[in-house]
Amino acid sequence: MRKSFFAVVFCIVFMGFVSSGCSDSKPEAAPDSLSVDSLASDSADVDSIDSIISETPMPKAADALFDDFFFNFVANRKLQLERVKFPLRVVTDGKVSQMQKNEWKNDHFFMRQGYYTLLFDNVKQLDVVKDTSVKDATVEKIYLSKKKIEQYKFHRIRGAWMLTEIETIALQKSHNASFLQFYDRFSRDEAYQLKSLHEPVKMTVPDPDDDFKMMTGDIYPEQWVDYKPQILPKGFIYNINYGQRHKGGNECVFVIRGIANGLETQLTFKKMSGGWKLVQFIN
Image 1 (cartoon, rainbow, N blue to C red):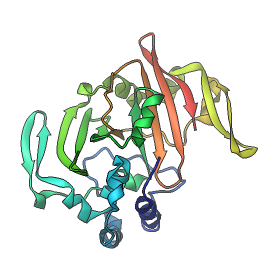
Image 2 (cartoon, helix red, strand yellow):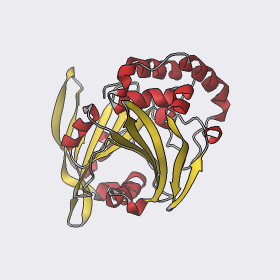
Image 3 (cartoon, rainbow, N blue to C red):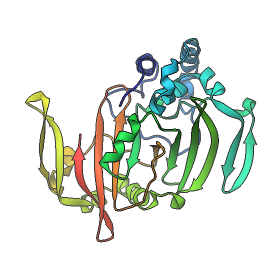
């Protein structure tokens, strides 16, 4: 992923204060809750960091790519208030209300867990992240066990990204509903994981004998425990839609991206005979 210098600096600073974020260790699963300030004991440290970061203006170039803007948005309390269009339209189960500026609570989104997840219809769609022509983007908080999705909708208005609406929908209304319902069980049930592996699964991982090379091969269900991702989020995940239209087809690329360490895992699933199967694994 391409990230602005400011975003990287924020994550490095954040590491020193919050032990669960931006690290190589396996983070605990995000809580299945609407609360974004789950680490109350670290609130004083986070407030200090916010104060420091808020003194640094976001580079104008960061509005060119949504990722660059969003990493600044989640890190900077002052910027969040500036980039939310108040009164903010809030839609819950079809009912519309408005949020005033004094009701907004600073949201760090996925920064505290040190990684985030993305869903694509195919590998080619990954290129949309680098597309500077994108004008609309939606950040989704997906509550798998509660079967609902919070969608934070952003639009680029006169060159500046703005949050214009928050909508909560039932998970089954998502274009990714079929895969998400499958993944909910896949992430929690080890026996179901084994049943959901194509035989074989194509695998590409770093060569243990050469840090600059990758090796490709096949793995079978009995080898899954040795190669499966260290992080396989369950209960709650994120997704960012960069304006691409999801077809809700027979393929889904599930991406797990580290924020500070640059690590990325791609799991490609395909629907076969009515059921989803993992067909490829890139680490």
